[in-house]
Image (cartoon, rainbow, N blue to C red; front, top):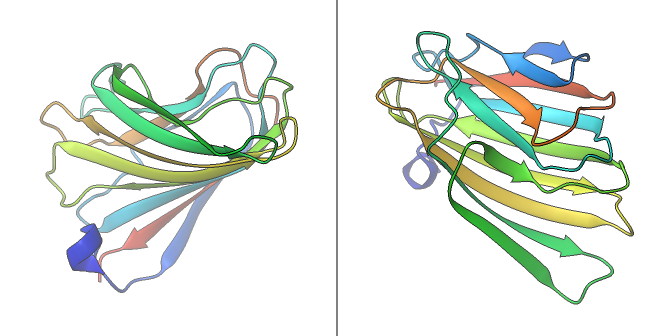
Amino acid sequence: GANLTGIDGGGAWEYIATSTTGSERAFQNYFDWSTYSVYMFQIAGIAMDNAGGGLGARFYDAGGSIRTSGYKWNYAVLNSSASGWTNANSNSDSFMKFSNYPSNGAPLYCNLMVWNNNSSSTYIQADSSWTHTHAQNYHARSVSGGASYGYPPTGIFIKQYAGVFQGGKIYTYRLKHS
């Protein structure tokens, strides 16, 4: 598995923290790539207001600044009331987008995995699966990545593209190198 994914085998998920407040969720100085290879953010019941926008992330650099460019993403959505998958992608964006949005403010559930192939990599990768109850049911998968401008990212900033979160929790875990 490690040869295919770049993620070390072994280790166990370690719980870090739960975030429950704020219109965005900042996890600054969380990433310790020398000890931990993968981080998971379990997003539970984050409702978005009707301002719309997608759920996305930006990353902190070593100086504590949030990078606002150079992200790329692709996602595919299966809507139970539609006949097939809908695809979306970005060549470059100010966020790594890992969901579209429910216009009715329905709760969003998402598992986001973030990894860096080694402790000095200049590229961050993310993979998420998500669902929300807009109309019938949406189920989707998103893959994304971004240039880190020569630094290993030190944290993640999770935010709605437009508008604010309406409650919900984000649980944070990390996977130790074997």
